[in-house]
Length: 499
Image 1 (cartoon, helix red, strand yellow):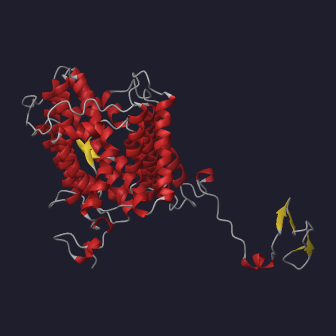
Image 2 (cartoon, rainbow, N blue to C red):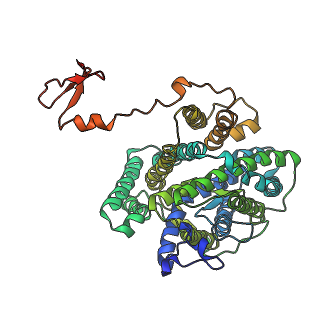
Image 3 (tube, helix red, strand yellow):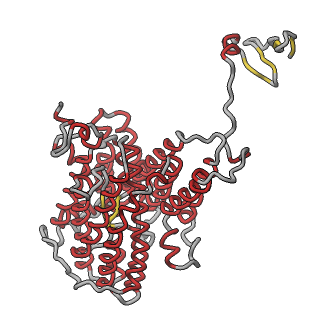
């Protein structure tokens, strides 16, 4: 067996053929891993920035939150990709601080509980999530292609506004937000990705995202829009400090609201596991999903010890797996090592933070669009004849995009409802699962002729008809014409001639 496909330690030969078990040279693995880090860096540091600011923390304390989220995200990624008994899906999934919990954490902070109450709620809710994770793993039979295709497509579509916001500058209050310079930088990054993908060799093509981000950053530096002034500010190396903001407190109301968030995270992580399994072309069963969800919840439960929040799989990195074609979990594990290193070396984190947001926006257009395209490819394999799958797909995707298009749509609903349905991914997943149950599992009451909600019958032309046609023959206004425009006589089944 070749070096690039050597079995992982402890795996038998049957397991070694999995696409995600492919071994890569160390340098190549870290190059692809670093590409994963750049892809999700903006998303992973956003929650600590938002929560730290809302809690009134000083600059150094917010920097500590950011460093902590990088460190824990790296360890969580290693657990998810490499795995130990009962923990880790062993799939190329990047873990990081979940944005789904931001709204709830803001409510806890503003309610007077502060960061200790947030950390306590995360610990308690994550332990509850760890207990119910096996239940979620057993619902895999409720995720046929009509459901997974909807969810994967919605993941890509719901992330598109994120790429657009990055391309505009990322900070709506900044004076240059939406400037032609920002959009031009994003467009340049996008064009470079396309050029490298077309003109480069296999290695350059697969590293097109990383190389385009580097080139975009260099161009931004020459234009004076990349700020590296803060790279030298602060310590170079720093060990994580457990409970740096005090011991956690456990408030019942905060825990209940966080449990709802945990259920949303379990739903989204299940969707991400299924999505990356589909893209990698590997088998994903209930046991594997359970292991992935347990890793998610264990990481989330330990995260507050090191001053950070709930962990979940990052959907944008699923797109990177699809774009690059690199399905090896060891490449993503290398990215986890890079994240852990960034958490120990704040100076390196400050270098990565200097990558201009518009550059990430240009890359995001390709990454998130690729996720949507993967979902569409899955939906193309769904049978739409004489069933209600068309209305399941149409309704679920539209329902999932409602909160993406209008952030205030559920503004007057209870907080718990908003937490669940403000996520386009969980909205689409819930609707697709329910409609699949109604129309495909419980078939009683379904019409025999679903009318517009079913695909049109497949048209079939007998091979004998095709054999009679010649080059240039065509149909116009119900008549068959030859290449010179002369009508061809059509013979009726009884032998008579007609037109």
